[in-house]
Length: 150
Image (cartoon, rainbow, N blue to C red; front, side, top):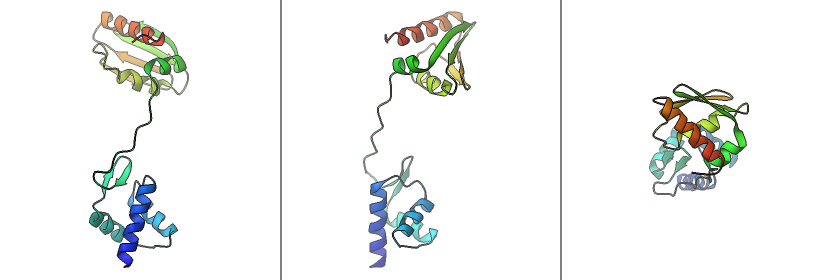
């Protein structure tokens, strides 16, 4: 009876939120008055057939949580972009402090064939291209996206 109750509590905890670690699950059980060892939690996880995902433990076949909608490249650029300059085969992008990573991730996810990669600091991004023509195309694409064009 005790195992069944504890495992039902585990399923309830998992169903209500993201439980990323066994220690976190043990703490959640302790808040419900169920004090167990890590070995017991590990055994319960195995017997319940839970799987560990990036979002935490869940039952196999349980739907992944919906990812929140992400802002478009145009929105990100309008929000954070300060300057875009060419430097040979590089495109140097300046952002507001602390926002270079956000812009770099958005640019990396575009799939533009001219863009070979990026390096982001705090407020500066270096976009690598194969040559000066490709760099000019990437800069133009960024400027078009800033204006809201694809």
